[in-house]
Length: 247
Image 1 (cartoon, rainbow, N blue to C red):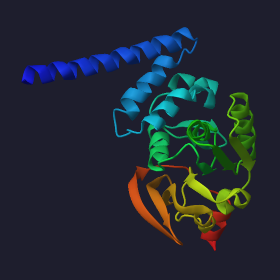
Image 2 (cartoon, rainbow, N blue to C red; image 1 turned 90 degrees about the vertical axis):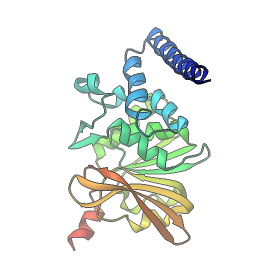
Image 3 (tube, rainbow, N blue to C red; image 1 turned 180 degrees about the vertical axis):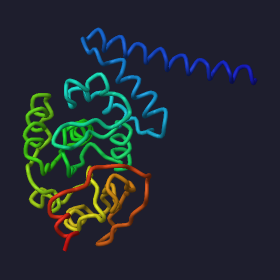
């Protein structure tokens, strides 16, 4: 009986590896030179840790991360660490992108607000999963580049706005989920108000630069119940929230 169980496990592992190899070969044949690196990222850095949502894994496998970083960093595009993207900003490590996406428990019909477009990579991952993505970037050159890149890559369900994300995007509210990819010492109240009852919000929270706690909030009526996920390091949120902190 024990031998049969071991043989069954080996068969499952062999089948999984075989299917992974087939995927890699298919992507390479299609001209995607980064296919092997993307597959490695999925298996080692995401599935190999605690990313279990297959929808998230599939989305991360579909989005060409190397196109969202500068050409000089493309050989490191699928390494599990942040990379600079210009204007003093960064693209988050793949694991954190996947984790923040996973904890939102997204559905295909969802409408999501993102604060901090950056390169547009997180928006692209969300766009594969949900119906509509609205994303705001406070640095105008980044907003312009992300808008063009997302359009060129065919992400038609993403709308990019240049502006301060503190006030959210009221004309498109309420949202099923909100994701903030910059840190602050508190969650902006307007973003909580624009979240649907039962909706989820994820954000790095903390007053120390580059050392925060990834925090998940679930809206219950007018209250936001929060839980801590893990320590993270994000660039600080700028604009209105900084002005309020200085007062």
